[in-house]
Image (cartoon, one colour):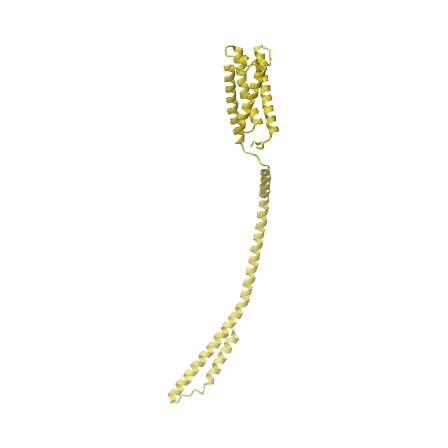
Length: 260
């Protein structure tokens, strides 16, 4: 992932002047190198008139066409320079027009009068078109690339450290879970022991209550029997209660309790 940087959008005249000067000088240096290679192959001599004299741009001679081709190659090779210096697609046209405006002033100063050649003007229009569209495409392609953020490295290191810590945390959690399970088992065993200790007491309470209920029921039966006997004799005696039956029933209940 390549990183891309942009200059601030604030008004900075010193930076703008420096960019214009850098673009102007680099384009002239690049054109001079290409022209020197072409003239070396052609066997001609190098002079400043081939750069700033518009009368040299002609379509009726082969040498004039060679200069036109050199300018077109220079326009194509100037696209990376625009991308590095300008870095903004919307500002490419401004810098390209500024370059050609200063070039027009230089040509006007070196030539005897204002340039009036149709071939020269058409060549400038073609150069402006190539440099503008090519520079905008290059800058847009660079702007579309993702930007590297320094905090992303920290996040990646944090994620790696968290991933390295995860097995340890899982092991600790498993140990804690095993400890909790053992504690729950111990507490459940204690509860079972307590419940088993309490069971005989509850059984004893139930046997005592059953003995009392049996004694009460037998007393009721004795009362009913005594009432029936009194009716048969023609007298109802409610004050006398047969104690023999009660004593026998109490003896039976105490013997059953002693066996338990």
